[in-house]
Image (cartoon, rainbow, N blue to C red; front, side):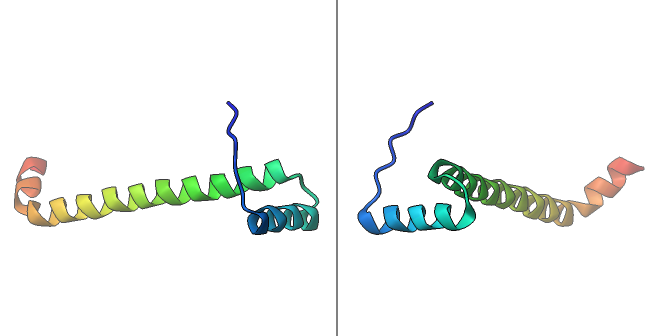
Length: 69
C-alpha cells in the first residue's frame, strides 16, 4: 500500500532532522510514529473493555455469584 503524505515545510524539516539524528530513513521514523499511535488506540480500547467489565461485574455481582454456585 502506498500513502502520499503531504507535510508542510516545518514538519518536513523536523522529520528530516529526526531521521538524521536517529540514523534512520524518514520512512522508518514515520512507521515508528504510526505504530506508537496505533498502540495507544489499542490500549485505550483495552482500558474501555476493562472498565465496562468492572462496571458490569459490580452491578451484577449477586447474579454472577449465583451463576458460579
